[in-house]
Length: 293
Image (tube, rainbow, N blue to C red; front, top):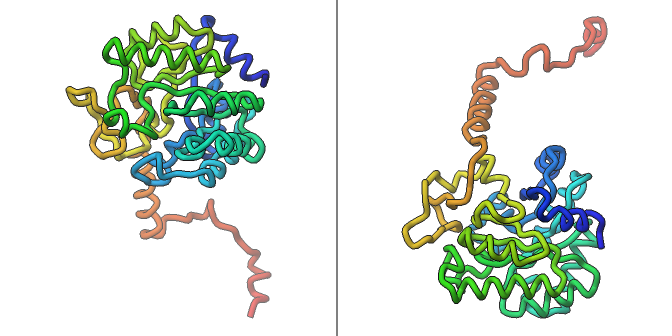
């Protein structure tokens, strides 16, 4: 197994793990230099970078393009390729072929798969081929329509037990970690306690072994989300629509207005002739200038 993955697994119960998404070289470099444990090249690139309204609209070509950029930047963290919709659900052979592309072409250390009906068969095939897999249960955005929309999963005993069973089955197959998305905190705590591998929470409370956020969300760079204290009363999180910030998102900085201010300032200085100034300008000697006709 990849030594980095062994390190991640060995940290369960010793300290919390950190994971953020990245889609390009500059941001991935900053994340890696900050000492984040894992960098996920997430299919959320569809929403926050490509302007699409659903993660299901991004494919292998886009994912590999962004994964290659992230891999060039990251020197220390574990790089995880997020397998996009229909790249692994169709059949195990196609799933393995696409998983290999993340490893061989993009240089990722491993791949992440969201739970679906035939998840165990596909996951087993990929792991048996020597490719490490991170599982993902709870709210699975690629198939959210089958879960009743973007809302908390496992809120009753039957649904909670189903998630426990899924987690245990993925661990038995050899997954090295599992993402728990939009799961009640006490259920996430039970799953975390039952597993020997780390759980990574996103909207799953503080008792998971680690946490993940979409970097553009926590940096305040994705303006289609507007601040709300909570989701609606049903627990729904209309993430692919406008007007809602997922309850689990914390903005550590709001970069959008700062960037907008800088852009407006640039425009004003160009229009006024203030930019470029002498300090940004190259010169030529007067005697050389006089030789020009």
